[in-house]
Amino acid sequence: MDIPALTDEKLKELELKANQARELLIKMLLEAGSGHSAGPLGMADIFTALYFHVLNHNPKNPDWDDRDRLVLSNGHICPIRYVTMAQSGYFPIEELKTLRKIDSRLQGHPHRDSLPGLETTSGPLGEGISQAIGISLAAKLDNKKYHTYVIASDGEHQEGNTWEALMFAGKHKLNNLTLILDRNNIQIDGFTENIMPLEPLKEKYTSFNWEVFEADGNNISEFINVLGLAKKIFEKPSVVIAHTIPGKGVTFMEKDFHWHGKPPNQEEAKKALKELRTLQGRIISEHQ
Amino acid sequence: MLNPDLHLNQKLFDKDVEQKATRDGFGEALVELGESNPNVVVLTADLSESTRTDGFEAKFPQRFFEVGVAEQNMAAIAAGLGLSGKIPFISSYATFSPGKNWETIRTTIIYGNSNVKIAGHHSGIMTGPDGATHQATEDIAITRAWPNISVFVPCDAIEAKKATLKSAEIRGPVYLRFTRDKTPIITTKDTPFSKEVEVYWINEAPKTVIFATGYMLYYALLAAKNLEEKGIKVQVANVSTIKPIDSKTIIKLAKEAGKVVTVEDHQVAGGLGGTIAEVLAKHYPTPMEFIGLQDTFAESGAPFELIKKYGMDEVAIEQAVTRLIGNQNE
Image 1 (tube, rainbow over the protein chains, first blue to last red):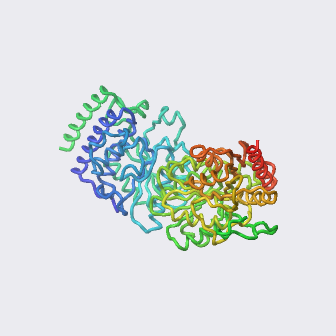
Image 2 (tube, helix red, strand yellow):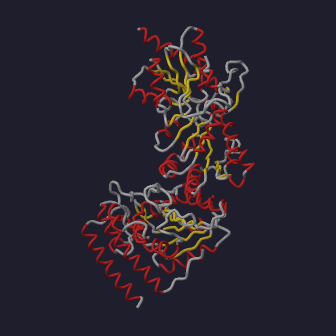
Image 3 (cartoon, rainbow over the protein chains, first blue to last red):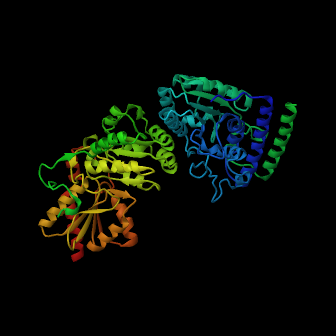
């Protein structure tokens, strides 16, 4: 199924949703007292675009056979998935407060059996693209029309399993699979290019027989347009290298790898929420 | 004597007893499953002939996936297939799968609860000339430690076929352990395959019960027969399901005999010996002897030479029984 055209009205709605997602995320992480901040903030726009515009899904029937599959490989950014799932109606917003707490469905890293709507179990890196490949192969065997999207981080391209998966998808020309690569340039210990350089990523993908697209992952309309182009490729699997700013929307977190794996404290959360409220006003005025 | 109720191979102790590799039973079962169940798919990591998936590949090429030398990828792709209604079998040498890809299986198949069957081949020192790199001797330990899995170790090619067919009926992960070389046919097509521990060599008032798993059951039965000729009565039980373990029968047999020997081609730590010791330590502490690899790697050599050198043949089993009974008389 093609991705519907994006009107200005819809774009405004999505931008406001993404901003609300960031606010919910900050509150959720503050309540949890642990978890990742930078990655989830950077990916708020993409998750909003997916859940509110791109995916063919039904939050009231999460096991619907023909739903598009969204596989999250870098499971540690799950807070933003939980937030956008709650906003979509998979579960009450109130439940976000239970993240990482005992008896919660919102595990620290996503566990498929714990929460309807999650497609896989992830956290240990480098395993999601392979799982998405398995789901895509099943669709082909069963002549199903659903599309499989998989989100992977840049850091997990240091895992050998990632390249095993890329080789396989190239061999099988999996055109019902689209990879969204969260290129935010940070990982736990620092900047990716200092820890273990990944560039030239585009050339690496091309040489593995993938079609490569690039987009600003914090520009919802650009991302949706490019994703639409990527889905039109039918002789190869395609990847959208989505350039995102880690910590996007909260200035003191942006581009700082120290925010990879920690939550804000009370004071930092207050400051972040204030900034996001200002941003909300700006979005509204920009679309007038 | 051999338990007459179990329809065992009456020619078991003949010099020319029929021999067949358990991996062949696996291969035959896959072809049957391919015919009976369209959801069965098979993946291999550059070992299709050696792990006997080539028969399935020839008949069902659309449902066969060659992933190349990439065991982690194989496991996680299978996880995705299993979550989407397929029944994937992944097949490689056990040192690589579930060895090399252990964490991938743990996360995506076991914790992820995907309906994947893991076939580990070339288990034990029976793998022989390839050497210790290819002899999987810890695979029972590393799979049975997981929650949410069944672990089957068939004793011969016939049981291997039944275990493989059974695994497809189970909703959830299963580990199947196979060996490379031909080993004696112990059972017949009429022998029941269940999750229960079955007594293959029966006796009144036994002095020891021997629990054996895999093809090593043959050496345990041989030891029982030799001991019988010396007037020592033992029972021999086949533990082909390591998980879930049939504690009830194990405790009952240990109570009857008072002494226990475990026999396996695996490290004694964490394998069958460890499993039985856990059950008995909790419910009925019993003096035990452990036949298997004693915290060491083996080496290249002909399988039977290795079994002898590493103290796992019928002579070693008889000695273990004698040691235990000697203790009783002290």
